[in-house]
Length: 303
Length: 242
Image (cartoon, rainbow over all chains, first blue to last red; front, side, top):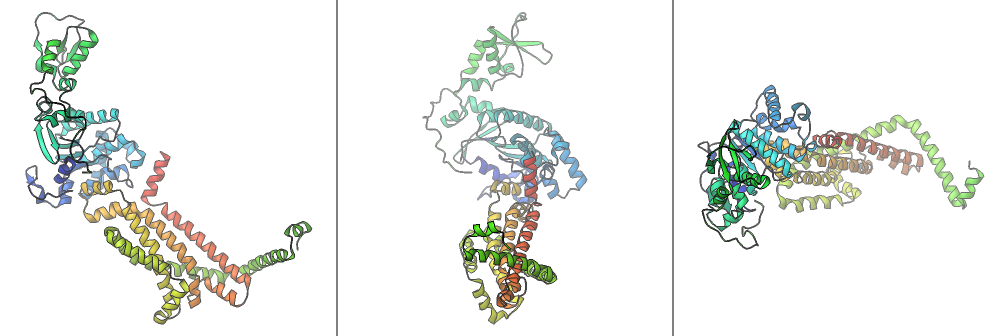
């Protein structure tokens, strides 16, 4: 996950990987092979590419759009057709309804799904995604993020994902690269980035001073107090994957003293009370001063 | 020939005479057309052929020139400026200028018509190719198309509606300009006009004019139908249907 303000170079970095931009020096490898070992078009056919405005070809039907990389790779027609239907199913668009349509007949969210399907068509091991959900509404964005996560869990591609949306980064990332003015300022897990930002720039960017955001990163199972004594029937219950933010919400809503964390079979594992939440909410890397309201100093530009 | 009410409304004897002359010529034109239709039809076909050859040859130079100009911005002003300036040369002067090198007949006419058509063709090819959305082109490169594939699978088809509109404008203009080329014995419907004028035969002039207008409208309609069949037009129709 590449995160940073506009003009910080995250898109540039992404485009260096599929050689839409060429590096002046340095070496980039994908799956251990230098990206300059192949001609650029051949390299790009092996790397899925999704961009913000879907980048679909308006004069081609949905099936032709999704089948473009297999077509370039000269798969036979029947195999392409099967693959297109498979992918439409995967991204939740019924093939019979969508195959023959044109991009302009689809909503923004549907176009993004087709964009994702097109990128996945030739089963690439690497996906580059440049703010793929930047132009869809919040509800659709959340749904697309969930689906991307499911697809990713199934196929385990390496995804390089550009965003300026910290919520998105935290939701989806295994690791986040924070960039500023063309430099990487921090590379770590979402948890570490939020809990231990290296400087005030990162702290402000990720909203490390926002206690609720920090709480949304910690899962209840990491901090629970082992069970002592019986559990009351009225105490609120949370799955162990839930976050401390959910626990706080449950406490405030129910008025109870503690929430009970349960496992997949609804057996109680332990409890979380306000004291636990409070300790977790106090950040270890102590208080970076908030930057003045002017915001980032990163140069503006269309990268 | 006129009823009382009409003659009163027409007022002066002069306008009345003009009106009667008009009616007379119209009737005589219909007579002329019904008597000479095989000859008029032949001239119409010649006219169409002349214009088609001219626009076809014009495309042979306009397509490469347009592609080149769309790629190199510095060429825009010189190329379009020159073609625009050529277009302002009066057609009779142009033909007169060509006679010493090309002689009389169809050849100089085709040279002139193909030259005039350049500005419409090149201008629209440049506008069409440049008008293609940059992110779409980058997506095309991003999925692994070679430069040539980006051009013929994405850029050219997306520019085609504008290119075809240019061809239609060029063709319609060529049909009307081709009239003048009868002056150097290139044939076509212009010869009806010129002989009509020299023999002081208004029905023949009018018949020629009517045939040119009809041919032009027909050609424009046919070309519009072709434009409806581009991939972009199909996609746009599908989007309107929802």
